[in-house]
Length: 363
Image (cartoon, rainbow, N blue to C red):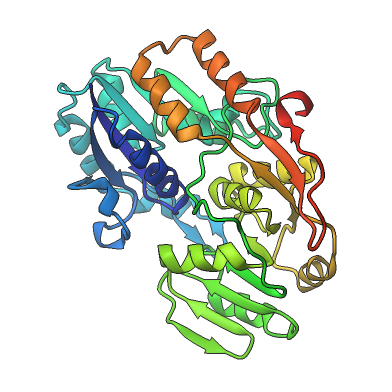
């Protein structure tokens, strides 16, 4: 079997998921070719596991001052080049087109009537999951941006639908916790405003990752450029995370048992809905804007964070894809099996974990 795997490069969540899938595909006797789009080719990092990958410009969303700018998104994309890339991409040799919100591969496969499997968080919104508001425009974009004949959504609970648990790419070593260390990842916000907001909280050390940042320490602020290994290291031993409400980082925090405070990207229904879901599930705290009082309250709160133990979603999904049965009942069976393997505990320092609880029975 030969698979073309397209990955959206706007943000790093899709890339993190693709790395886990790449390891799961390895040794399965299947050829996987990777195509990435959504950011300049030079902007991709830690790509060794993808081999000689392809790159296209694709389509992306433009952000400004912490919110999506629809005008700049419309004006900033090169639609004729996108259409040329779709027409020129040869998908004939492939048995499956797998797309994680990547539009060139998805549309090339769709137009040539190939099996196109849409994988990620966006397909979860095909079902009745928590939504901040039912924005028909945003829902249409989620379906049409990268269409699929088979749509596999992921979320933090099944919500009565054939959804899969998150697919996380983490070090298997047990997580650690360094009291007072806070990881900050707010890539769509003004870095100067973020630094000014956090600097007064002198009892905490903030490790702030941002695209284009220089590596430097300024008192209790530790500014870091985007780096896969550095970010993972700081995530592993931090006490909590302040971030946007992207799905993948929140999933990693839940898998590690890290306290979480999210600020959704403005004008982004998916992130606003993620914040709502985290609140409803009791998995994290939210703020609508950068708010010093809200941050201070969260830093002072002592409630134990949840920790979700996820099964090997990547391995199970790869086996399911290679089996070739993409009918609805087969996806439902995969969903049920994986959720039966998810366990929830509450993390507390110097206290033994509470008995694990099955999410398949409670969500």
